[in-house]
Image 1 (cartoon, one colour):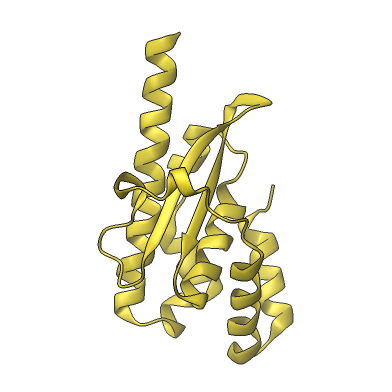
Image 2 (image 1 turned 180 degrees about the horizontal axis):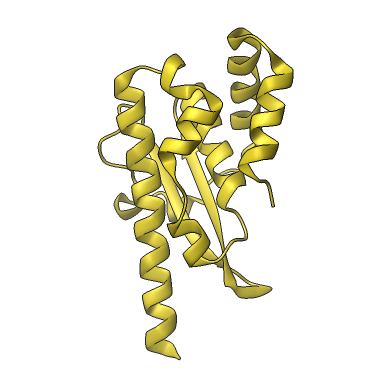
Length: 144
């Protein structure tokens, strides 16, 4: 489980934004492929200039924890998506719901280095992640 502090520390070590963009690109390249069956309209992020898909699913070893698959057609946003997935991977629904996107932006200084359109897209990614988590939680309560 990666904390926001861990991510911030890594960003501070990198120094300049050319290195940070390179790091984001590399993170995006390491993102596991999105299963083809998850590439559906319900998993597609609306309000993002890039083509982004996010899919929440229960950890098979511990259904209290949630995992994500994701993909994007642009390297920087795919890297940001990878960071978001690292941040929420194997957490509970309540922990994911508590994710503060503004703090994420401010601490990584993304608010200063990504365009306003990219901001809107990243908020849309997090909104879809949280919506999917709420749906998973509701389906668990129904089946319990």
